[in-house]
Amino acid sequence: MATTFLPPGTSDITPEEIPQWRFVENAASRIFQLYGYLEMRTPVMEFTELFQRGIGDETDVVKKEMYSFEDKGGRGLTLRPEGTAGIMRSFAGTDVMNGNERRVFYMGPMFRGEKPAAGRKRQFHQIGVENAGGVSTLADAESMAMLAQYLDEIGITGYSLLINTRGSFEDRIAAEVLLREKLSKRSNELCDDCKERLGRNVWRVIDCKNPNCSAIVDELPDITDSFSAESRSYFEEVRGHLDKMGLEYTVDSKLVRGLDYYAHTVFEVTHSGLGAQNSLAGGGRYEVPVPGSKRPVPGVGFALGVERLLMARESLGAENPHLRKLDVYMISLGAAAVDANVIMSMTLRKAGISTVVCGGDKSMKGQMRAANRLSARFALIRGDQELERGVVVCKNMETSEQREIPEGEILEFDFRTRR
Ligand code: HAM
Image 1: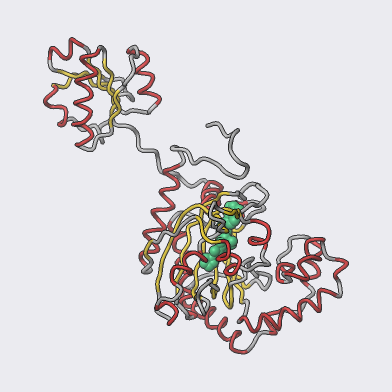
Image 2: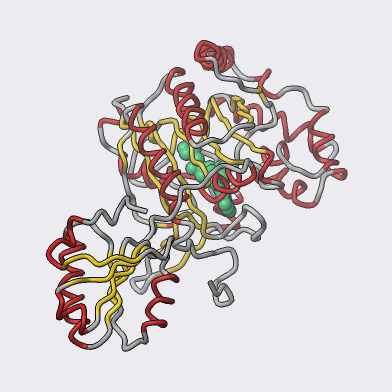
């Protein structure tokens, strides 16, 4: 398909690709429901303020990547860069704020103005879950277990689950001072981006991929050691649950995640089949500040990038479900046959047999070619002679075998499973 007139970082999802999308989406819906999650849909467009407050003004997503605009009424709107803030907006002020859980999952397009690369798009798709109001170490561990079960279900092997703690918001303020103090001493050795991050978002220095920055960070004391005893024991408890559940994971003290709403547990799944953009899924515990709500909305969740899921499956040579073929293509020779075929096509479709009738004035050869192009399993052919005799010629497009079927017996033929 032509891609020349597409904005960079966007793409079509073609009919040939849809079966893979449906496969991963249907599996998500099935597995997440096993854990009590129900599907929810929020608008693609939200007030810009929701993301500024929710994700954090100083994050890369809000500062550099959002598609924000003013509508004709002068309202500041943004195409959602992620799903969590919108879901939490919908639960603000409800009983979720008192610890009553709402477990929801969602799927759909997200928008971030990042530099397009393999696995990095400007319109991409996420499958995500949020356990809003679910405030317990078990909820954290269970959402990772659910993620692992989902990946197993769709045949993704060889992934790594990385976990870390960001401590409480209070711990973070103290740790930030400490980090800034240590890193400022070596600021001239940091990359230009990190020099800027030192002032506004010092946590991002920790996961900078630049080898110099990374070496400096390696020499820092483990920042989680400075967290309160409560925060450290919270993390121990989460790990205890993961161990009981038999989940394999690696504690990565450099995992900080790029969104400001996280507190305590954070996690990410990476996959080697993805190249440089190796994050397949990310999530954690959060408290999302929502405009109009006195208190932030707590919860735990994660999101997977669908494009990256499909890349990982491809790298593993996973088998893809096939496109469902068209059952019947109706070939009409002459105007009377067109009329008769239109009526028969309605009967066939009502019986669940997918049917296309050639509408134009094409030759037999042209119609046969069209049937092949649509990968039809059978062609039903009628001209004046067949109409007179009350029969239809049925051609198996795979074997080229032909037979006549009396018009009145058309529904007795098994178009769906017959070869
Ligand atoms: P995130 O880590 O920003 O987290 O994104 C989650 C996943 O979305 C990534 O692991 C990646 O697979 C995919 N993704 C992100 N950006 C792109 C892109 N430009 N192109 C292609 N795929 C991309 C969140 O969005 C959080 N809301 C997750 C969460 C839910 N945390 C708690 N609940």
